[in-house]
Image (cartoon, rainbow, N blue to C red; front, side):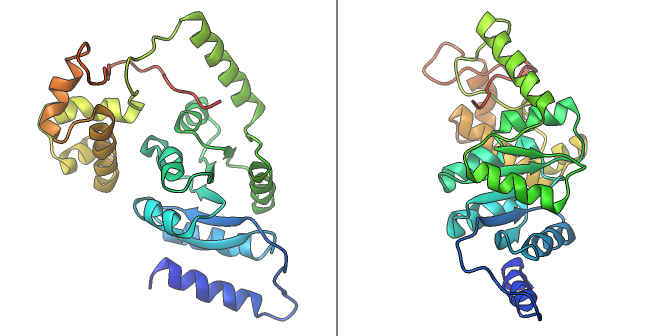
Length: 252
């Protein structure tokens, strides 16, 4: 049974219980994205039971773009196991302009904070957040606020200062994410998606999404053209230096 069928049936059952009345005023429309079905279904029920948000449905990361483009929610909540290197916040905004994204992270490490900032998330929910905390964050992003821990604010301001001082080299073309830079040399070696997935210990579907992003950013059609494009920094195409580990784009 698909997620959409489960969501419709589950929410009808929830609001039909004695003493539970659905709100009559408009609620923030929320969509859940997680590659773990149990997590996305549990989170959908937990949020819906509070009657302060409207849960529209849920999907895996690979299905999210199509579902969000069709349903046009206000907020998308990304599960802790979703890889920020998928660049989902940006891609979701392209399909559904104006949508806000909230990343739930498995840790509050500096690496995770910066990865989601680079991906363009509107807010960050740490591992200690409760469902009630998440509802508060949903309403904050609906008001147009950028929600993040104070430590992330300090990191972002430090990064902006470094960019302003010229300590981080700017790329002449669209920047690749750290994961995409890891995949490029493997593509140059002729590895298949499955071989890359085994090498990096990630899913084949995730590799497929990364490869699609790389081809799109480099404006090439085939994997075999990647090496030539990277090594032609002075032509009309984009110049990308995949070995550079620094973050080159930051949402403001």
